[in-house]
Image (tube, rainbow, N blue to C red):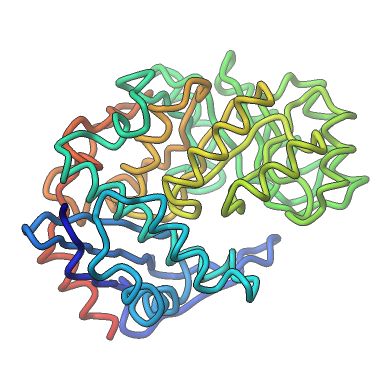
Length: 372
């Protein structure tokens, strides 16, 4: 038996947080990156780390970990991941708290539990999940370096380096979005292009955009409608040849199951920094039952959440690509003793115990102190 004796939550954020609303989207983004890290330690000194994707107000889920979850974790067996997660869910389940900041906190703790269990048992997380289908996870370009005007040139450069899949972040109107698509396609012939519409379109305009993408042989159309519009996504999925992708906002299998039951998506995109490992693998299993692949979402998180996502991707049979933002990779590795290994076309799956990454604890504590 190895019991948890210490729980710490670190809100990494600037001393004076500042936010802005993205043009054309309405979504709040931080001007300086924020995230939530959780550190668990057992009586024998084994440490596990987790991270929840908390890009704004990371102090809120940090307080949830400290005030609500810590009493349920202290003294618990370190390898009892699923019973512990069930106990943490039950704390606020009756009040309907399965999403939002509660889910951010839960994802961070869940990932830390998987890391801790792997380190306690001396095996990588992907082995705890039943084994890896691959030792390298293919990538697609998502976050684009440079300005908007540079996208055709950047696409051509990455295509020359071997990359074959990219995603454009668009939401400026149907004609404008298709024009950008055409510019990138002309600059990098043969590359497959996806479009992320960031939930910005009406049903009618999403259909027009989708039909334009059908004519161009697009890879997929992501988040075309409001994330709550399940019926609209089902109608759109049935009407288009271009696969419709959703799921970055999912927090658990219950949400995914309903979307799959309604045939409201062709691709699922769980973000392990939002679901944790437990629910992320559950969503992947449901997608597999529906004969659909997953393309894990990865946004503004650091190396702990990224490593967790790679383990889930490696342990999922049908996972053709993982979201990759080159400009974030260096930032993601800032809290790691050694950076995650990546090339233009793939991530190397960590092979060490737990998540297989070593957190620079001194750096984490220093960064957390800045935001107090």
